[in-house]
Length: 179
Image (tube, rainbow, N blue to C red; front, top):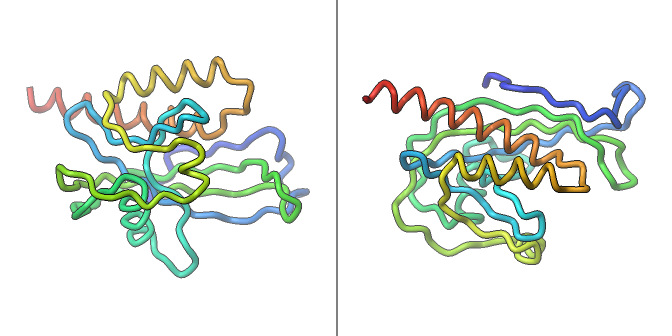
């Protein structure tokens, strides 16, 4: 899968000096015209693509389907097509490592109209995570404002803004071709 962007946080440079581990994630892109299915997290006041870590021994497709089902209640996940990958080198705040090298594999996919039951992890429930349909341009603007007004590092927000802008650009091209 094509890497769309590589982001390296300044605090992990030089990487050669850091104890780093590799983490894979799968993220789903589900759109209906200019609306996109995202996760809103109350704690961070942001929108993100649904998805997350791929388990040991699990391939990207299986991880994508599991994560979408758990986080959004998506049913009958189908027509899975690669979009691109986002690579990150970020700080890790536990004693075992200094940095994480994360690769997020992003896929377009279709789902049934109706969402089913969620199977959120405890921390996701505590953070107030919930699936929402939102206009992609509104989500981008919201995340940009959240990043500008946040005292946190905003590493996830940078990733989400980049990916949402790329998705929005594809949607714009597709709508021009239809017109």
